[in-house]
Structure formats: C-alpha cells, structure tokens
Amino acid sequence: MDMIKRPRRLRGSEVLRKMVRETRMDKSSLIYPLFVKEGTGIKEEIPSMPNQYRYSLDVLPEKLAELADAGVTSVMLFGIPDVKDPVGSGAYAEDGIVQKALRAAKAEVPDLYYITDVCMCEYTSHGHCGVLCGSEVNNDETLKLLAKTALSHVQAGADMVAPSDMMDGRVLAIRNTLDDNGFQNIPVMSYAVKYASAFYGPFREAAGSAPSFGDRKSYQMDFHNSREGIREAMLDVEEGADIIMVKPAMSFLDMVTKVRDVVSVPVAAYSVSGEYAMVKAAAARGWIDEERIICEMAASVYRAGAQIYLTYYAEELARFMDEGRIG
Ligand code: PBG
Image (cartoon, rainbow, N blue to C red):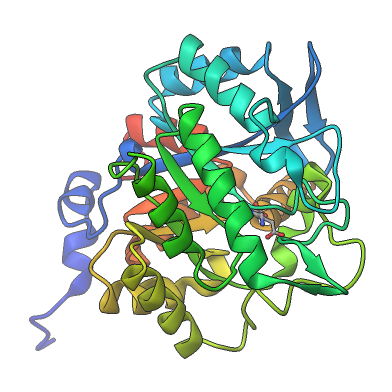
C-alpha cells in the first residue's frame, strides 16, 4: 500500500487526540442566563425548560453561589415583573425586578460578573420589544426607553448591558447615555445578529413575553438572510458595540463564522431556550445522550468562531471542562 498520509495516525490515543485538538474551550467564556421574579421563596421550574427555574431574590444568591462554585464567572439576568404596562415602565424603574436583583446579587455574590438583557418585551402589556404607535413598534421613541433601562441597570450595579430588542440605533443611544452619565467603561454586548426565531418559544413561556398580537418580524431578522446579519453586526460596531452576539446559535453557526471574519470585536453565540428544550425533550425519551450532545453543541459554537458562549448548560459544561471531557 503506497499511502503515506494517514489522518487516522493522529487519532490513535486520548493523549494524542487532545494534543492535536483544534478548539480549546475555557470556563471563563461561559455566560449563564437566568430568570428573576418578584416574590419570596420562589424557585419555579419552567415547564418547557426542565432544570431551569425562575428565582425570587431571596433564593437567587444560593443559585449564584452554586454557579460561582462551578467556575461559571458570568450570568445574564432576565427580569419577570409582576405588572406590565404599554410603555414597559418596569424595565427602567429604580425598584424594577432586575435593578433589585442586581443590588441583591452584588451584595451577596460580588465575584460574579453581571450582564443584563436590555429589552422591553417582558415589561410591556402587548409583549413587543418597544413602545407602540398604533400597531407598529416606534423605533425612535423606544430608543429613549432602552437607554433609560440600560442606565438604570448600570446604576443598580450591572457590569455590562446587552440590548436584545433589535431597534435601529439602540447601541449608539445606550452608549451615549452611559457616557453622559459617567459610565464610559461599561461595555455593551449587542444582540446584533438576532433572528426572528421559533427557537425562542420556551423563553417566552418562561418570561411570559410572547407578543399579544403579530410577531417580531418587523424588528428581528428574516432567517433566510446572512448579508443582512453582516450589516447589522457592522452597524453595531460603528455605534460602539464592544461585543457582537449571534442568536440563536445552532441553526446560525454560519453567521458566527461570517461575522467573526468582518468584525474585530469579540463574537458571542447564544444557544437559546428552544435548543435547550429540544435536547431535554429528546434526552428524556432516551433518544439521545444529553451529555455528549451538549459537548458537541458547545464545541460547534467555538469551532465556528465564537469566543463567548451563552448557554443554559453553562454549569454542566464548566464541569465537563474541569473533567477534561471537552476543551
Ligand atoms: C428579549 C429576549 C428574548 C431572548 C433573549 N432576549 C426573547 C425574544 O426575543 O423573543 C430569547 C432567549 C432564549 O430563547 O433563550 N427580547
């Protein structure tokens, strides 16, 4: 046999396979999303997201400490308010749920890094990501409220803000407001390449944030498009975004790679609720091996070019990285 090139040669042992691994992962790049709500003594499982919970603020620190113990260094907070109104007042209220959660969390578990999702949909009675004018979301009016929301998060202790609303110009509006108030050093991670996706279904159940009429297609992107995503990413970088996110992850890994090629800021990918729910549902039936599947999903995100990974499986992945199963 005159074959001198044998790719299998480098697959012969665990030591060798690890030596030639092309993708290295680190726990410090994981971000864990979690839901906070009003009340006391609440740890409520989200029906379509087994093992993910809504926490009241007295129960929250216990979870945060557990994450910190596992080596997860960063969380993304989502708020579930008790009352909603047409202008989403709870999003920017000084005693809003996220603002209160930040103060409690920072006091109890100060070592974690706190990122907040900046959006209106959990707080508006109609469930859209901005204020309405008739049945349309009014872009420019919404910018003022998003900037106000981001500022109130930072004043309550947020280390980074992450706008997820997909209004045009929101990164600049937030950047200017933070800067005017002396927060030049707080980074903005933009959900820049965010598709109108059915993968958010379980999240909307978790947060009670499904739109009461219509859909989000006039602000989130059409999933057929990729050049539009590049444009969104580049615009947000021009507006001052420090990190660009692609979301969802699994069906949009091509975008992670493409965005990484055109921007020089770090790129994040978010494995969203529907990705989590699919894995959980299939695993519950014994149809897939959950642990191996989530390892492959994580590696695919980093392999595609993401430097940061937002996932409901952050704790499990941190453990697998410690054990040397991945990374
Ligand atoms: C708020 C927001 C959503 C998600 C993150 N921020 C929901 C949406 O846009 O409908 C989805 C996260 C997930 O599905 O895990 N706009």
